[in-house]
Length: 327
Image 1 (cartoon, rainbow, N blue to C red):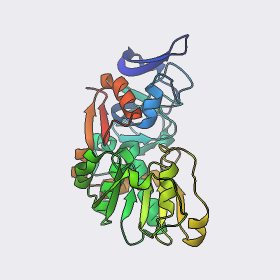
Image 2: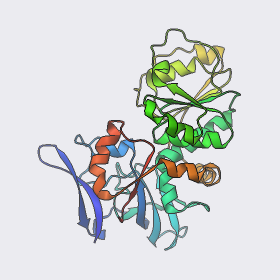
Image 3: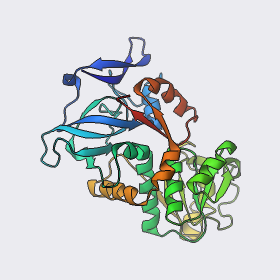
């Protein structure tokens, strides 16, 4: 028997989440069984835990879209008992039981060996948000980061926090966008050299092109803010777009793409090829300053998750929440 956060739906369609003891034979099919050590809290987890059920189609359900831990049993030659592994994506925690349990069973193809230089707790201090941030930074690098500040929108959130720290560590000046003035010191501690009030970028777009300001952007917001940023990029600069908190609509024109040659790069962290996942995790171990990472972390346990799921949907979480599933 082991502990898991179980989300259930009653006959009236209402969901509830509680920590329960369950047996291993209830785990879904998979090649590898992992003794989970840590998971995180992400926006999708809030949707899965929340009263509407969000992304979940089948109940009962175990949320948690990422986890790290130790292989307990394996039918795949790539993994042996005792190996340290990390998992992000592949709709784990949505369509497949996820990391909010002390055991998980998944397909071997979904896992990545934990790279040298990271332990399982640090891996989840990074988590899906940090993994996505690294994918976004790598995409900017692949297309060439221009001189000048790199803008990070939604900078106080999980993706934005890690992107800020990575970019600063790599030597890029970072302009961090936030709607919460009280997070300015936090963002400065991560390496941001400039704080930009969200209101400055959230105005309705009046001109398709403005002054060339940003050498690149990691955008975790979308919507009106992304449209405004497109018109402020330097010639040939790129935006790595990773989020839809500001909406899926993009009230922009083709003019920034035609006249400034800007690039809009969509980042999907869910179904990345194995080689790219391993590349990203290896870069994380090499380029993410772990001392700054610790300043982002809030510890939590399985019993904290129902409230944390509500908090993240309200935008009330700063940085990274690391869930110790054995606490």
